[in-house]
Amino acid sequence: MSMLSASDVDSLGRLDATAQAALVRSGEVTAEELVTAAVTRIEAGNPALNAVVTRTYERALDQVRAGLPDGPFTGVPFLLKDLVAEQAGVRHTAGSAFLRDHVSPTDQELVVRLRRAGLVVLGKTSTAELGLLPTCEPVLFGPTRNPWDLTRSPGGSSGGSAAAVAAGMVPFAHANDAAGSIRYPASCCGLFGLKPTRGRNPLGPAYGDAWGGLAAEHAVTRSVRDSAALLDATAGPDLGDPYLAPQPPGPFAAEVGRDPGRLRIGFSGRTPPAFSGRGPQGPPVHPECAAALHDAVGLCDQLGHELVEVDLPGFTREVGAAIRTVFQAAAVATLDQWTRVMGRPPGPDEIELYTRAYCDRARRTSGGDYLLAIAELQHFARTVARFLTTVDVFLTPTLARLPPLLGELTSTADDPLRAGRRGGALAAFAGVVANVTGAPAMSVPLYWSAEGLPVGVHFLARYGDEATLFRLAAQLEAARPWANRRPPPPS
Image: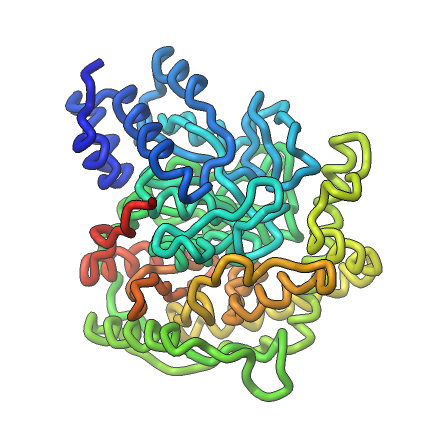
């Protein structure tokens, strides 16, 4: 193989996955060169960011030398989030000291499909313990830092993947989302983050009705076209899946660049009262997040869309309580599942303060409580579905605050539930609505704060309608390109 210069390594890191794959297909660059360049970038940037926690470089190079499948991303380097996406023979910790030595016995179906697309997995990225928080500060590995400001969190729970992509280590990376964990770190790191429709990507064989149907698998990407093409490569039911997403009108990649038409876009800058407060509004919104919404409304108006200010209906405190109940049950089920896998309960120092306190409190939830909560959320989902017949998409800020400082969303011995309470204020626009309803949603990086921090805006679409989101996102990307905005090199 030819030796790449430092300039070549950097230049390759500035390309999206589609462009990198095109270089391999044309013969201008080999898959091995792409992989070794990505390894170089990871090793240069990771000491400052702490994004990659498990490396599989030799395994990856063996895969390349043995010959790669002919797919849409043949030879492109990729990273898996260290949660759900298990890879046979590779350590899988879910961000927990309890699982520090656990090695996955089988591949998840999603991982099989990612490799079939020609991707080369270089390792695992950090996550919040069991994916429970909108930050990435697990005790096991220490905090992951935001490339835009090393004193801040990259968001979570897919924070390691987002930091790695934003820093240019790889062009895109796996992420998953049970309450916003694709979209929140995308917002914090200036990336595009799409949560697909429930059932669009497989969760088996290890998982089925994950988190009561709230969980979804996909990626954080730099470009809209990468997200669409990757979803084309991985989407579709697996045998025995409990959910089946509606058939899309055609390939998602074909939607990128297609005219979205004149959309009716509902928008709101008010946080819902479901989780806190006694008045008609929830937690306060940072002025820069409000400015990001105002900017997006103006851009959409310039592009010819109809904008109407309206609040999401039906998001009552009862719905908020039902979401808490489902989350509590899911957290306990996740911990108990790993207890079965490990053949023993976690020791006193193997589970973080927040996880233990949250699960201890959650064990008071009965099976009846869980089923009543599911019924409440299904009623809410129908309310949202009816609302979305009046608008094509619903626009809000992705987060209510700027990327938090490291330590802001952690717990203490005196206040073990502090992390969740503060995380709720950050995520006060409740991206979880997309998970509750199963509808697709995306965070789009259109705005940077006065101090240079990315601030995403969030679009919720109708169930099964990723096509509208990809059309709109590509239109926004063309009007306000973001890929050329890069954080400073970590030091």
